[in-house]
Length: 297
Image (tube, helix red, strand yellow):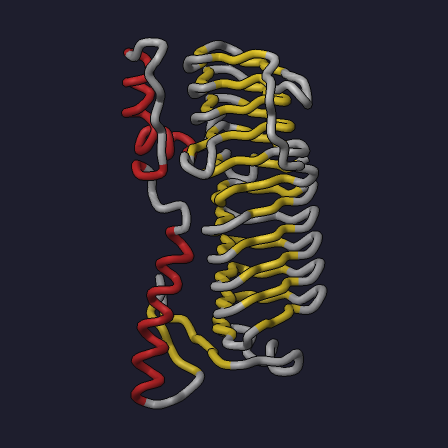
């Protein structure tokens, strides 16, 4: 059964476009686009704004590095430069890390949010509530993010990680094997094994939006199928060696391998109840699955 979250996403953001889709001629698109959905980086943007206001106000008045901030509830915040010895001294505090680069050691558990103003490395087997990073963020293997993770510059994920409710970046989001996700956003999102290629020929060119139940397309590695429209299905969608210009939407399952969706000029959406990515996937935009029903296999 589709969960409540999936229904909310559909009725709030997709339903108006689904109606137009049903009534549209074959040449028209779904046009589900990020301008009509909630900011995919909402959690981290809101988090940063509240912390910045409180820290600037407090530092001007007191110059202290430990403050209380009103988030959804009152939270204690510790900000400044840290080292291995001092990082875990304030277990019930949100950390704002001002080091030019900081590394969270293997096996570290952090009960509260972390905000790194510059680059951040999270080693293997860490357990962290949420992460905001204004630089480049690199995550090792088997890391658990409880709520969300966001990096402004770029985000690199190892293997075997659980990525919480949302994983996002304004730059490149690279994903290793066996990662579990709910929502992803990147420009682009790339799974392991992707190789940039320039295709001169295509096995098939489909000029319009595909509306079938189910959808199964498979090209060749050197001659992929090229879809110039969107793909919409009430049933499963399975794509291998395919390029899609537009949105991919399914009420059930989506499987992609050696697939490109969207382009630098056009950010799109991939939305399904369950989503599985194999090797060689590149998507420009937003991905939404049911809670923890997205996987990089």
